[in-house]
Image (cartoon, rainbow, N blue to C red; front, top):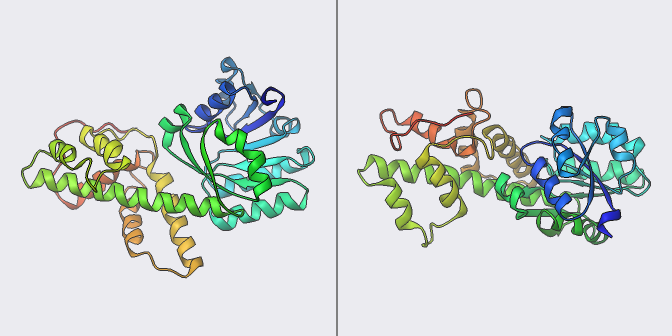
Length: 300
């Protein structure tokens, strides 16, 4: 069954490439497209069919998966591809966008007889490589059921509500991630400044209520001063702004998220492509003379 299903995967970036590899490993036929042709070509050896022409890439696909930079990019690709889609195509957008954008995409495709699920992810490049992404899906029960076998090749999908709800769940995820990264940076820098061993402090508090994947992964990154990108500052900042936009639309105030957004704003121009754990660097700028560890910064 899976061998007969062709997927057009649009967007072969840091996340897209390993996601395509997981789909291929699960037995799906995948046509790979990217605006920069070379990125899709690298997947030919793994069994994908690179196609530099968007309308060709989607024409034979029962399912289209998009993994693009932002809502504007998704909208542009849908508009460019929609006339070439097969009747009743299922479009799964795994990009991180705003809720209202996902709802617009659902309406655009629905008017032409196509189906839509928004399914943003969490877990970073490592999760994409391992096929363990947390996948938050918005759509109808029937459309989610159709998307589920595809999504399960890349991680653990969960339906959280109608179209657009996946993006709400992703924003909630990014709210927690962005805030926790900044808190972990503050904790480790405090340990350093107060004369404790920050690496030992991190180990001591793991297993208690402070334990988290952020403390595990990004805490270690900060200790190693490894800011080579998994997630990126520019992506986290986009998400922070989308969170605040969703808060305005929902009529709620998020004061901590506003502060976290301000911290990431200080890195936007100088270090947009650094890992979002570079929040430590923004904190160190506020504390001249205090630096976590003695290693050299690893930066993109």
